[in-house]
Image: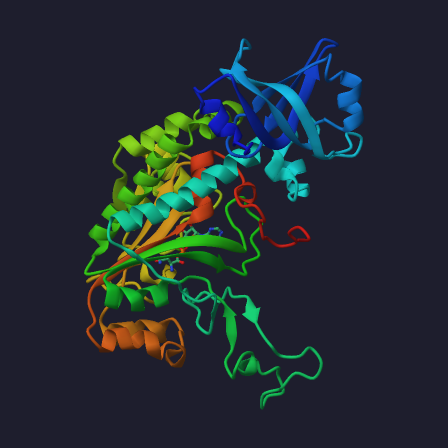
Amino acid sequence: LRKTSVQDLLRSTDLDREVLVKGWVRTRRGNKYVQFIAVNDGSGFNSIQVVANAEQFPEEKLKADGVENGAAIAVRGQLVASQGKGQTVEIQATEITVYGSADTAEYPLQKKGHTLEFLREIAHLRPRTNTFGAVLRIRHAMAFAVHQYFNDHGYFYVHTPIITGSDAEGAGQMFRVTTLPEQNPPLDEAGHVDYKQDFFGKATNLTVSGQLEGELAAMALGKIYTFGPTFRAENSNTARHLAEFWMIEPEVAFNDLHDNMDLAEDFLKSLVRYALAHCPDDLQFLNDQYDKELLARLQFVVDNDFKRLTYTEAVEILKSAKQKFEFPVDWGTDLQSEHERYLVEKHFKKPVILTNYPKDIKAFYMKLDDDGRTVRAMDVLFPGIGEIIGGSQREEDLQKLRTRMQEMHVPEEDLWWYLDTRRYGSAPHAGFGLGFERLILFVTGMANIRDVIPFPRFPKSAEF
Ligand code: 4AD
Ligand code: MG
């Protein structure tokens, strides 16, 4: 007899047959006549109920065998229609095998609910909870939906390097990668550690973005995307930042800023639609447990157009807002998340795409506007999140790009290969980066980014 997954059993209409299921005990309860064991194998949110008759399985024996919360077991029995509430089928057990028990006196996950803060301290066990099971299945579904969307629209998936010599954002937030010895490292002429010798004679770091390499590919394949881990050595202890996060970066030849906005909006809506269609049980649980507005908010994003306006227009709105902000708003300064959330949650009450930011607060590669002061940038702002996407039309003119690099102190010798795209067959193009964890935050309604990635990396993060 082959094992069947819990989800397949719960959906089955083929009853009164012998089945074998393997999973972990979520709860055991009952009385001296009958015991009910909820078994979950991770295949979906719902557990299957196993009915164990006391004649064959007295409670003392189940206890002695360790059939308790957290134990891994196999159950053989008849799949039958259930009389109980909340399920259509259950298993009448004929054989229960314990693979591994979990001493109830020690097991950190008790039947009662735990706070998310406590679960963060036992991050190695939290995938076993309802909440993290739901989050991790939704995370998987979103990763799959990303690939499906791009494949369906004729994009090619490009793998960009993790170890790189360049700083794609020019923001200096890189983790150094080095092969230099701790003892007696090579020194440069000034007597400092010579990081130029990090790796085969080059300074190296972990990538902050795959964009620059993505642009190379877009100049050959037309429509591409990357989807990989990225790293930021920023010391920000917020609920929206990680030191290691996953980013999705489409890049499209011959797209301008408007095409870029259209793509971002269609892409985000399609991902949320996918979650609503494919993760109903997990979303319903999160909605009921944490955030009663979650499902309504997801549906709203799918059904409504995003508001598009320029940074300059947004600054005017913020300046005349009645609300007092912690940080002042002035043309030329970057918007804080309190400003972004005011625009989205209070003023427009819908997702917002802000464009044409001042050039001084954006990266060197963005296309300069005709006014010479702003660039063709776009940030997509979401309720509860703030910035979920950052992107732009790129500067395709070699001379203008070099000027911007000089102004922003981006060394040309590091990016000579990037400049070649503008030397040979340069074309207008645009792209953006979607922070995968910010997407998962939005879709799950979780409040802290550390709760939507299995192994969060942040300053002083856990030991594994
Ligand atoms: O705005 P960012 O820095 O843009 C780029 O990296 C561009 N190269 C993207 C492009 O045009 N191809 O980052 C893009 C997105 C942000 O909007 C945010 O969602 C996410 O990445 N992000 C982070 N997510 C978690 N933790 C952090 N520390 C993040 N920094 C950025
Ligand atoms: Mg950004």
